[in-house]
Amino acid sequence: MAPPQPIFSNYNQTTLEQYSYVLYPGNGTISNGTNCYLSFGNFHPSIYSNGTVDNGTNCDSPYYGIAARGGVGIAFATISILLLPFSINSLHRLGKQHLKHEHKRFRLISRRWQWYWVFLIHALSAVAGFLSIDIDRDYIAGTSFTSYGAVFTAVFPCCLGAVWEMTRHWGSFVERQKFEEDPYSFRDDKFRSAYILLAPIFVYLFGFLFFLLAVLRNWNNVIKQSPDFIDNPRWKVGIFLGLVCFILIVLHVGFIYHFWHPSHLPLKIPLCFVGVAVMLSYCIALSFDSHFSPFDSNSSIVAVSVWGYIPILYLLLVMNIAAHYQVNDDKIILRQRSERENARMQAALDTVVVHDDNLFRQDNALGYSDEKQSAVRVPPRAYTNAEIKAFARANMQAMQKSGISDQR
Image 1 (cartoon, rainbow, N blue to C red):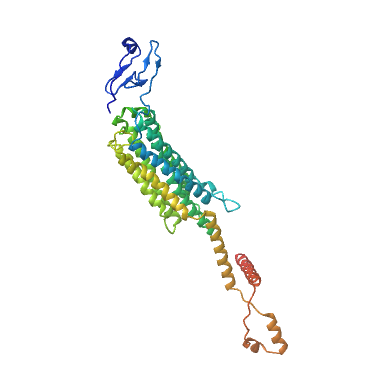
Image 2: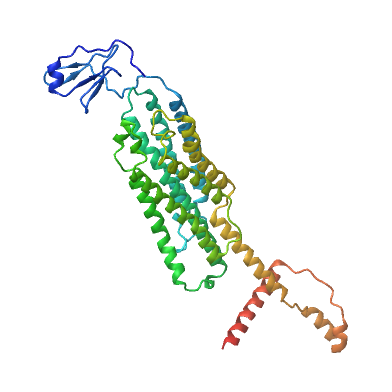
């Protein structure tokens, strides 16, 4: 956008040449490559002979009003903040311990890691949304654009981390239920043990490389609005490694089915896979066409919202809605233990044979023979819970002694 007229050009030419300042009438700025100041309308910077600048306004100062990008960014940040209490509540409900002791094989932290990543997504999304406000307001894209680019890109590896921890914990909980049912059903399997050890290492390795190449780079180049900054080899390799990380997460589901045979796959997992797939597809598309890139000030805000912002909010919604209907792992384990105990008790009761000694004593007193005694119908009688438990306990002890003697 052309600056308002007139352009202020009342400078000492010798001072400008000494400190390499150049006046750009096209956009009304004066810059030496390091420092940049507005020089039009009411902006009249003074450059002294010693190089100091007085009354200077930086080129990345908020000159314009909030536009479409800023408005969408505010909405994105606001929704992310509003969803944060639901994530906190999900962590409180699902991460709470209801058992006295945790098994060293199934640590409590296992089910909490997903929500730690989710909290990081909330924070980065809110920061990126508010930083996008200054992209429209700044006269020339500056530090707000560089900060926005780095923060917004960092959301994608965090989404991979959250989805991985959600998938990994589901497999861990399936294993835990099998272990609770029969601790000796898992035979030593070197491949399974090696996979459990190496899978998280490889997933986080490729996720970190994605972060290293796509996020930790010189974002000052984005100010130049050069397409080469996005579709350069570093970005492409980083996105490829992120894709490998996502493929490993998907393959982990097949591993869980191969070894532990779960009854069903939670719907939240494929739904979250769809969200991550859309994010990675968007990043891959940016590698070949930067016209709808969030790092291009002239790109379509609709494209940035649909392909960049909405998938992130979609993941947060899916995880929190699924958590609302999910039961704490410890409560499920306690319920299953109770069901197994009741089943064992019922099986023991089915084998209990009760003799009414009082009735047999009366028969003997009347002089009934064994044949007559067997013909006597024993009237039914209700037994108390204490009697039933005593019968079952005695029967179980007898069965255990019988099993021990058989082994001998």
